[in-house]
Length: 114
Length: 115
Image 1 (cartoon, rainbow over the protein chains, first blue to last red):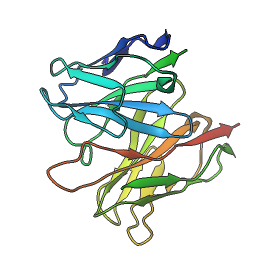
Image 2: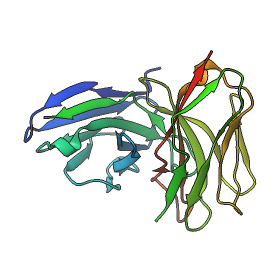
Image 3: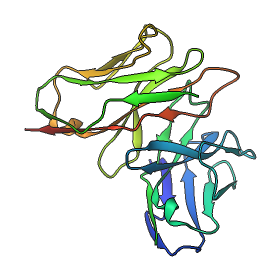
Image 4: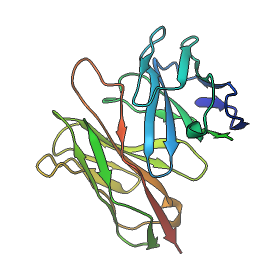
């Protein structure tokens, strides 16, 4: 089972460039999430989509946009990358709300902004 | 707001040693509590959870008890193995309203187990 698949796994950008991180899940989950992981900071929620057709801001949404393309896919876009966005990005999905269910994570995408 | 505090790492133990990773939380109401584990090069995966006070979550020999009086959810394992080497994250979600879509994570504790 593929689970949650993220692409690309590695990316180097120059300041000001744009890019989109893609995420797809094959578990028929309703909810999808984007987190960033920084050393000593744990994981912080960027955006989430509780269900197809909805998106909401998380803890650190500035500088990012998201699109819930369909039930399977949830993309994260950096319109004008900044060095502060150097991080490891994780996509995750869940069948329902996280207080009762389980988050399933992808393997991560390591982004470096020069 | 909600917050989770974990013991600082890294933690290095010999195989078969006893493991405790401390986790305390601050939250309004009665949150659900989780431990997630991240093996090298992988995403996080749920290790165990507890949704109400005095619940004990357990999985793969790991245990944690939801202690409301001390606002804690410490992770324990009686005998660690090299394969337990990973980063462990404590997390909480609130239980207010119809459902919560936000997990608050601690900073993570790196565990290394040596043979």
